[in-house]
Length: 78
Image (cartoon, rainbow, N blue to C red; front, side, top):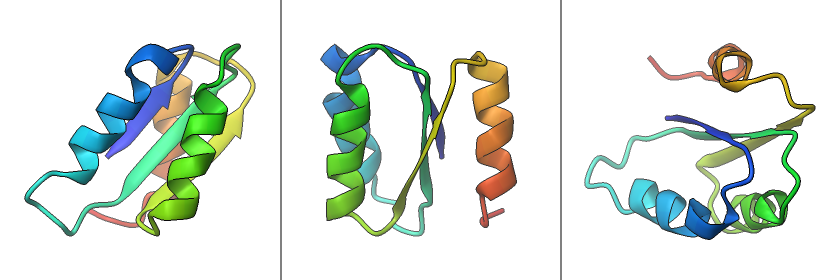
């Protein structure tokens, strides 16, 4: 699952927890920090430390389409 992130600190923990708690366990989670201006990057980094199935990418703001494409390039699942 690829999740572009831009200034959503208020909702980010709930979003990530929802993904982690899915019943489907063979899941790759790619969180793309798209040049945010809040503490979302810190939240992402904390989840990366705790869960091995989460990958984070930090990039300058390029927009949601660019973030998704970047996530597709690093994804190893189907």
